[in-house]
Length: 226
Image 1 (tube, rainbow, N blue to C red):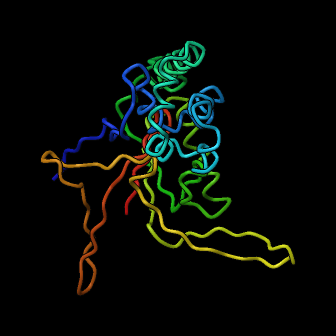
Image 2: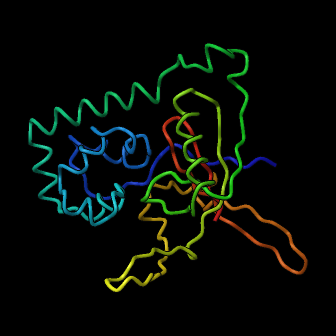
């Protein structure tokens, strides 16, 4: 039986002045990551914090000081940029005429499923290891630009990720870290009662359950199974 889910409303990141409350929408759609003006709309509020959170807009909005948000909401120069970005964002995601709709108008109600073990979408979602993930991420961005009715499906884990650095004496050091999905631009899917949407996979002697999250990449949705 097909489960219904709430897949359209991003979580509220916390305090936002009403005048700039759509920063929440921008934070939960990776469209901002390939649009320099959209990057700037976050960065301008607190450049130091923006670097500290590795350009993660959700973590940024969760941590930024409220007075800085109030200041941005009353800065006419900032608001001009904000309005320009939100207008461009709405025009992009709501565009009806795309390459796909023009070339294949009879297939717009169909759905393309794209499976990959990893997707290299942005540094704020470090669920990739290398070439395969970066290529898959590029496919999603291009699918969004072309208007393909595509949904990508992959895996993401709380553990198993690491970063590397080279010490002053030339040795490579590795440090592990854990992902907190509530601090990432990922939308938790829920059922009609508001409970986490789960899938189950029966295995010999046990059953594995995984939660489903959504990542918005422009017009494309990526479902992550955890």
